Length: 81
Length: 81
Image 1 (cartoon, rainbow over the protein chains, first blue to last red):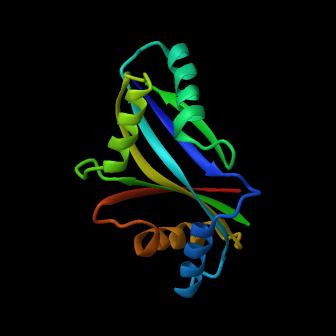
Image 2: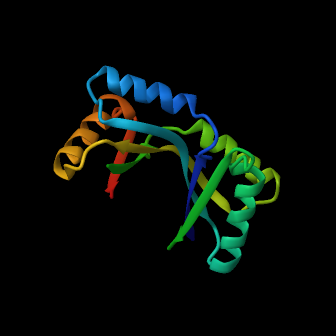
């Protein structure tokens, strides 16, 4: 059993209105030091396999095909266990 | 300038319907090895301060007050830079 942690972030050139809204909310309750805030996704997958090389390849495919929209998002992942 | 990375995850005892849906989608395109999938949030904050101890304390407060719903979510964070 392997565990994959996938991080999907919005590309720097793409607007993140959700992040802007949360940043505004933090400012309004006194956290003025927040210069920027961007929100992405964090996914934990449990994989029923012990073949690390194959898992690496297949998680990359899952990201490309479904977990990230590579037009506007970047992704990275780590395998554990 | 410090950078904070905040990870917000749904508690183990709480259902994650979005994760279940994505897991189903992965199964349907052939990734049957995905035993479980849970989706959380990943936030990157730029903080206009160099006081690491204070920043640590204030990011914790931001998580408690706004970034995470501690009834159903866990959070952790890292400071960099």
